[in-house]
Length: 257
Ligand SMILES: C[S@@+](CC[C@H](N)C(=O)[O-])C[C@H]1O[C@@H](n2cnc3c(N)ncnc32)[C@H](O)[C@@H]1O
Figure 1: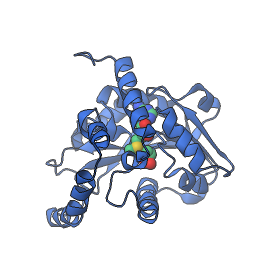
Figure 2: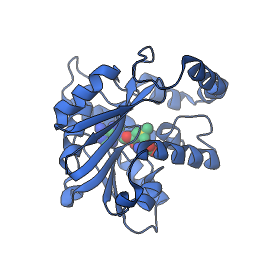
Figure 3: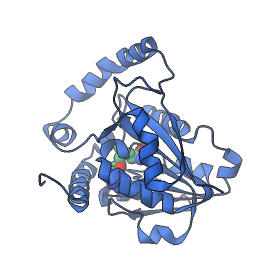
């Protein structure tokens, strides 16, 4: 990586790192890095809780009438859940290995299609329709700001009027703005999983450790106050933020009807 990476340098680096993670039998560890990632029941439970968080407040009757696009679909963890909630599902990912895993996981379900993306834009084949909902779940928490900006602009462009883009980014844990839970609740929740998470880390193979810690894995952080202006600048849309935990900020970027 050069000292001042360009957008295409970043796209190459992200693609190569995620392709390496996708090639591991433990790719799902990188798709959802939480205790219980290798227990199918816990993994499904975590996936549906996360999807609910991203769909919070949406009119679910309306959602059934619109097409959904998932940016950074990974191995298809939440793809079938999105498909069940929307008229159709399109997913894409920067890593072909992730797309192949997602196709395997969703085989036989109608109204689903997957594409490989270039890390900076919506694949041309997916631009054949406008979407009511574009979701980027746990994707931008792994991206540098310039890549987030490019993707947000592109994702907003394929939204239908009245549609919205929902995404998450990394927060600064010491930034209290927007937090709706108390410090005490946060400490309790963090303590509850700390030992299990440490066990996950202790059990990483050298290659998993390298791909989690020695390559670009976690993305750029945002202060709560700067995120809405940043997203509005890329899109011209209306931005709403929500933040249930200190580690992340969730955003809905809406296109006027
Ligand atoms: C932590 S996984 C989350 C996958 C899925 N959204 C989920 O929640 O199960 C992040 C995924 O984003 C993909 N990704 C990272 N940067 C991307 C980019 N710039 N464009 C498209 N996909 C990207 C990775 O390949 C990886 O599959």
